[in-house]
Image 1: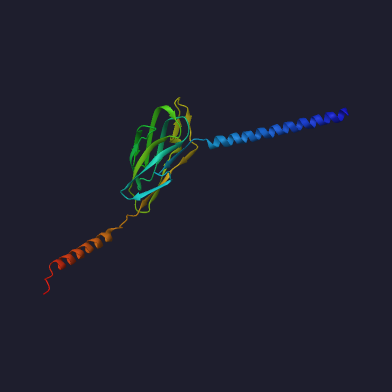
Image 2 (image 1 turned 135 degrees about the vertical axis):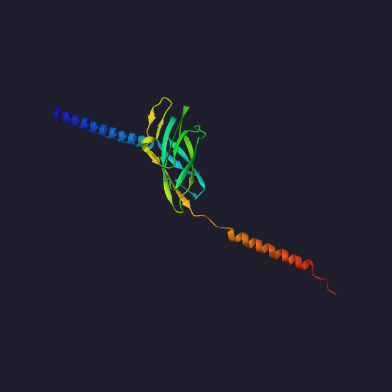
Amino acid sequence: MTRRTDGGSRRATVVVAATALLLGAALAGAAVGVASADAPSVALTNESGGSTASAPAGETVTVTVDVNASNVSAYQANLTFDSDIVRVVSVSGTDDFDDPVTNVDNDSGWVAFNQYRASNVTDPRLATVTVELVGQPGNETTLAFVESDTKLSDAVAQEQNPQGYDGIRLTVEPESDDGADGGSDGDDGDDESRTTVETERWRPPQR
C-alpha cells in the first residue's frame, strides 16, 4: 500500500509540473503577441487615411506623417523619393507638433525633419508634407521612410524605434481635357438663341 501511494504522489507531482510549464509557455506567448500588437509604427497617409495619392503634373498633394505609439515627445524622420517625379514644397506642423526643423534636398531626393514638445502625446500626427508632381503622366514613386533615420522618443529622452514604416505611393495623373468641347457647344447655342430672338423682333407686321 505504501509503495502504491508513493507512486501516485510522484505521478501527481509530474502532472502538476507539466501543467505549470504549459501554462507558463502559453502566458509567455500571449505576452509576445501583446508586445507585437503594441509596437510603435509610423505611416504616411493621404487626406482620407489611404496609402496612395495622385495629381496631374504641376499640381500638389499633401500627406500626413502619422504615428501609432504612446508617450511620444520628440521625433526625427527622413523620407526619400524619386526627384524626377516629385519635389518637396514644404513640411508643416500639426495640432500635436509645431513646424519642424527641415532640411530638403530635392536634387538628391530626400527630406529630413525633426521636432519636440514638452509633454508626451499618444498616436500623434507629426507633420504634413506637401509635394509637387513633376513627372510624366503615369509615373509613380514611393515617398518612403529611411528606417535608420526615423526615430521617436519620450519626454525623458527614452528612444522608441518604430517596428513598422509605411510609405505612400504617388502617381502623376494624365491631364484632363473634359469640358473644352462643352464650352464651345454652349457658346454656339447662345448665338443661335440670340439670332432667333432678333429675327422675331424685326419681323414686319402682316396686313
